[in-house]
Length: 210
Image 1 (tube, one colour):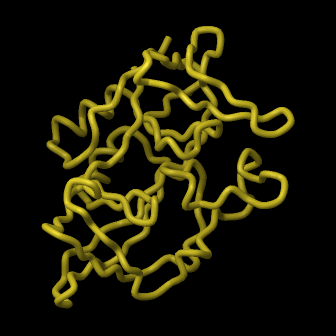
Image 2 (cartoon, rainbow, N blue to C red):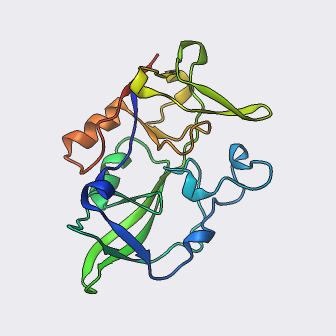
Image 3 (cartoon, rainbow, N blue to C red):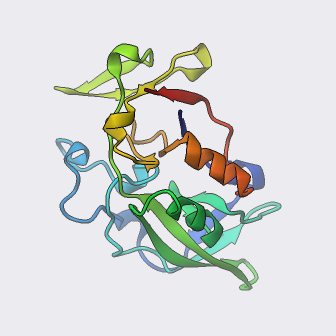
C-alpha cells in the first residue's frame, strides 16, 4: 500500500517561519531540471513540489529560520515554505528504507533569539509515475497538450492503484502528475514512522500497490 505524507504541525501549532537569510523566492531544482517540471512558459517552482522528487540546488536556502506563533512547537516533521522541515529522528527512519534523499541544515530560533534546534529542509529525490490508470478511479484533469494532473476526490471514495514493479523499490517518491499533493510513502515506511512515534502527520487514505 501507499499513502501521501503530509505534516499536520503547522495547523496544529500555528507555526510561522521567517527566513533570516537566503532567498526563498529563488529556490530551484539542480540542473538539469526534471522534464515533467519544465512547463511551457516557466518552471513549476520548487516550493510547489511538496516533497521534491529530484535533486535541488542548495543555493539561496536559508541557514536560519525564526519560528513564531501561538503555542508554537516544533516537532519531528513540520513544513516551512511548503517544504518538509524535519529533524534527525525523521531522517534516520527514512534512511533505513532508501538512500535517495536530500536534506539541507537550517538553524531554527524562537522570537526571543533562543535556539529551537537544528532542523533540515528535506526532499526525496525519486520521481515516479507508477499509477496504474485502468485500476485508478481518481479524477484526471488535462492541463496542457499531452499533460494533466491527478485531482483525486478522496472524500468521494476515489482512489489510486500503484504498480509495485514500476516503483522499483522506492519507499518515498513524488508523482510528477500530482506535484502539490505531497510525497507518497510505502506502507512499510509509513508503519516505521508510526512505530518510531514521529510527530506529526495526518492519517491519510491508503492506496493499493499491485
